[in-house]
Length: 198
Image 1 (spheres, helix red, strand yellow):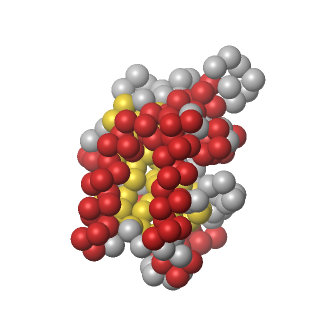
Image 2 (cartoon, one colour; image 1 turned 45 degrees about the horizontal axis):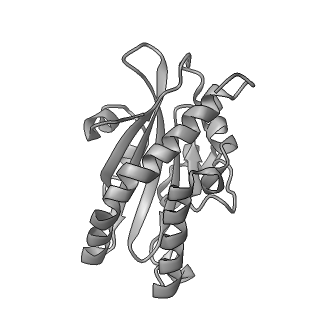
């Protein structure tokens, strides 16, 4: 796992740049996928899906998510009217015809971010509540060692001053607990995808 710069995300000709110019790139992380080639993006995404979502993350990360959902319930942050299709329109409303016709990706109850589109080199999921409208972008790129790697970018549109304060407050938890936990799970899933050792 490695944290990357914003330019590591923006340097690639992904479709997300034209679709979400009003979102800010908050975080960019790279995930190791040893032996991966240019055509392995969908295999990497399938490995992520098989990793089990939040329920299989380490206890510290699960605890943080549980606290966040509890607070959201108590304070009304996650009311249905504050989400995608309520407070904000879905990014799908911006998609051109070719992306609307492309596969979306699978939605599951244990994955709060919902699929927007998926191609051979990128996939996007989204979530909105009273704090933020966020996009998780997965992109496939050639790494420095010649193998391809998975880049995850988190793009956000904070909901006013409160949303910006919220993002600043949770940044240490994302960087120290959540993203490292995601990384371990996703990299392990890639290593085990064909029944090989982790």
